[in-house]
Amino acid sequence: MAKLFRPGNPKDILAARWEIEFEDVFHFKHLYRLAHEFLEENEWEDPEGGDKWEYFYFERIIPVSNLREHRIWWRVQYIPHESQYIRYLMKIDFRTLMMKSHEVVVDNQKYKTWKGDLILNCECWLQLDYQNKWSEHWLLKHLEKFFWERIYKKYWEAHKLEAYNKAYEFNNELKRFLKMKTPLRERKGFRGEKGIPS
Image (cartoon, rainbow, N blue to C red; front, side):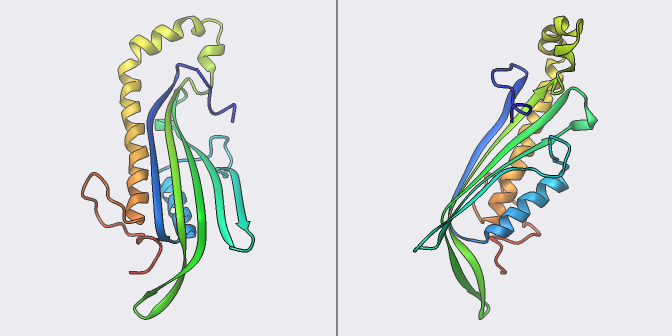
């Protein structure tokens, strides 16, 4: 993780931070798949160049009660216009608690799903000089602060807004799936809601 986030670096700028808390019936596997597909369709990718976004996966089954808990960490990046200087980096943490098997009946047909608590945290960062080319160059490192504070400022502020919008598009897609309220009137998603047929 040290390669991705540079604590205290002024060139790592927080663009958006949100949390979704949900407690009800939903299909966790379908939510997981929807989140992955949405990010993939919107050109988010593995920051380390592979095809794995999942940096941590933990599942615990509590004996006797058969309840499940999950901890999942995803790290994804989006590089606008194949930029060598700027990228958006998203940190997504899934956490489920007290998940238990549940059945719903729709049109006289039973469907297996889950009931429990979901907490989803997301941070979206704008990173300038994410490859550290300027900070490691013998001449550019002396000009860099002036460059990004004066010359490049309007440009990276526009990217900060774009990163914010992308993070909240993801938020709205997840809320639409979970049938949660969003600030704007949303169009009906084509993926369905809660992973349960309607």
